[in-house]
Length: 217
Length: 217
Image (cartoon, rainbow over all chains, first blue to last red; front, side, top):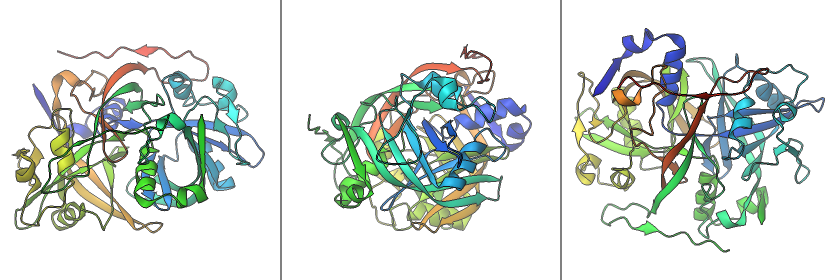
């Protein structure tokens, strides 16, 4: 049976229910841990389900911050220091990743609270997550304030990328499923994935064919 | 073995390879078909892997358009008419969904070219995709131009939602996996999902517990 909700039906939902419902509607979400440091050197780690691809050349990523949320340290640290890391959540660390969304005292690093391990690479100032397999260092580029609802998009440029050799296909495709990265629904649901197939570049006068990825193992 | 790429290594990648690589890095992507009509009534349908949750109250979704891409009809139709639909891609229609990314003549609707079926609901002017199980009608709210790379974010408010009753948990969580919605990597890879679990709201002084979803079937 199909349910239909109009805008009145959505508005009159109880707040927490609407929040869970609307958060499920955009489709599967990326799950990443964003690592930062403030200018006193205190580390911070927070899970985000809103990291998105903004462009490949220059290599840009965006993510969304709600200023009233527990993400506020991530935002203030990035605005203070300009540097941050994005680390894929994988199936071995999803509980620790979820736990970073708790409100901790300012003096507590989520790295310590969740037993995820800081890792420093290539003289980059922001902390990576050792247990994460695919990770990037980024430099802050632009803050975009969305007047509609007071959210903020943070756009940054990728400075370096770390990933397993056996996940990178010769054509540049990175098989994040092989790295056991996972996907999310809504605010609290965690999902592994199973590849169906890759499809060839679509043309109006040609049939689609599967792409077989070649990995140089 | 871990590979590392710095910004120079990323810049010197061949264009198509960099595009595939950077597009894989944000994590799993939502897969949606956006349905529009121009003012002459011609329908258009295009796959997007960039639809994201922007806010729950009001219920807002965003997505990203590259002005030089084949998505241009989606953008111009939304700016012309203000209304559009977002339809989840599921495992039964991913090939048709992928095929909508081909460049068709202006006179050809992607609905006709791919044999996906237009569906009109609740007097909403934009076409839904009949074969999609979870779908929304949206009203255009704001265009946000990203100076960094010329991309555009289109933000819209959800006007109505259609979903199967057996996917909606009592707490508002919508189990899009039950509706066979799928996830993507990069530009061309399609993936089904398998739930691990839902986790309770994180608190600094409590252990996480699984949430068992109750469906009123």
